[in-house]
Length: 292
Image 1: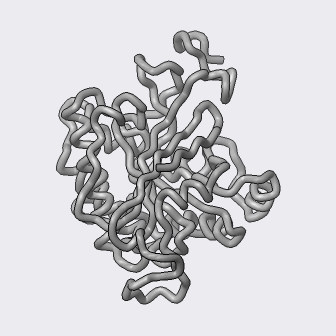
Image 2: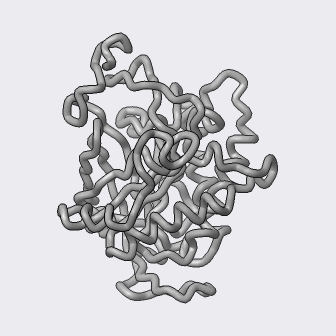
């Protein structure tokens, strides 16, 4: 087991990495995948991936902005950004992506705007071309939890809270599961030929308040992995980062169940936001009234 600690604004992000069975255990350079990809894919264990990507940098408030890149006052990403990141000594980039305003189709297909997937791919390629490791996810923004150590500004028009909140009154679990699977199937098809330096994370900090909610998040992980398998190409051997409720350490320890039946090497990820002053004085440990 290896442990990665990455410091980003307001959080220490820690991933436990556990080696998986199957393809991820084979030697370097081995790939028995039958794909149409022209690129090269060198299978890597989750433990080696996590070790190689440390230290990492988070590209926040950009592709995860609502409703579009630039909406939160950050300029569009340019290639030289990653030159600076690499020159500063970082070896990986977590690239949060929000899709809530980029669905052009309804149930059951939940089609994602191809132009948005193309833009995400452009940014991913900028980092991969500089030999950086990259993580992409379905993100959402920041959330408001009255029990959290840090009280953050709430954005409700976002993925985890707009359509993937299993704790919401009257939550449509059929829709949530359908949308998770269909979203990751499309993302997988769009990124299936990317190198082993690209990893996937199913969703950021999905709300959960009970063991029953935790079981629903475990189901999200399973649907995410099924989409990986069904999207083919290199995705069945790609490293993935699995999650639990809120990506909270206690909820993760108590409720996470390891998936079975999939070959992907995986790491378990949680977020740690204490002390809040570590990342920004904008965040308060008291009440919303103290946010400046």
